[in-house]
Length: 156
Image (cartoon, rainbow, N blue to C red; front, top):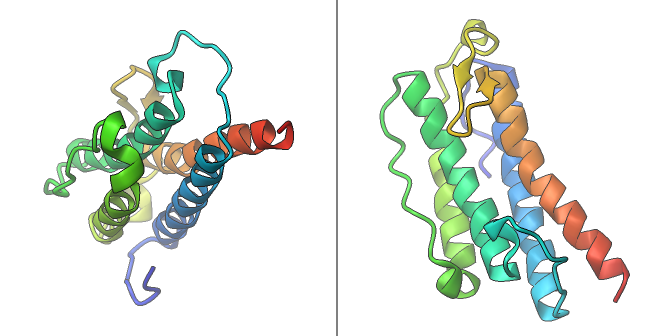
């Protein structure tokens, strides 16, 4: 990621850079899990139906978080493509990840610190988030899933 990008808020800059780092780490760990034929534990959540579904879930969510932030802040649409289907995600994951990360870089550049903590907005799953907490959620999401895969890889 280019460190030359300017952000009005250092907090936003940090979260955008951390998101880039941890989404890349997730994809790396996910690819290790695929290569090792990791089996996911049974779950009712369709995001855990397969490693392909999990990869699509994490990458799609990464795009969705930025779309949501732009919507609630009345910023221009970031132009995020839809994530590839689970059947194509292994082949297209790197390309889609680069697209998402590129689309994450500019939209929040002018957001001041004053807009980060208030107000709160309902997410698509109805949990209320301020922009700062959604940024933190977006960073933690790939970290959590990479951790889960790391745990499964330990037992092979």
